[in-house]
Length: 132
Image 1 (tube, rainbow, N blue to C red):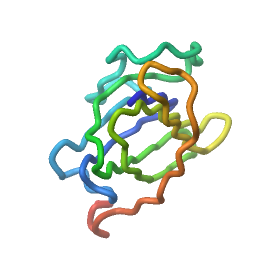
Image 2 (cartoon, rainbow, N blue to C red):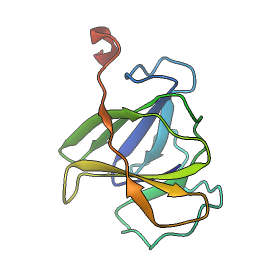
Image 3 (tube, one colour):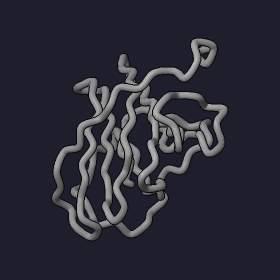
Image 4 (cartoon, rainbow, N blue to C red):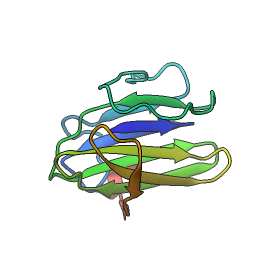
């Protein structure tokens, strides 16, 4: 999965709700310095058009057939969502708040850059206390 963002995207594998205490949860990309992130990692996915310098990008492995929840926070933008990746597919997640407040996910055949948009499910905190 390729993640491109102008803010911070955190992931929670094996969950359709947000709880950063779960195993494997953490920062995937972060535009600001000072966060433990994985900016710039690559898995050799098909190259994409150059993104704005206002964004950061990384490529990470996510388990197939298991839900993964995401939390995106950007300038004046906050989203929580989830989906279940299919085996044998690449995905590109774009989370942007600078010009729009939105998240899009594209599913692509491995090695291809063209793909189809994937609907995302709204996600919530697993427990009300997870906000503290």
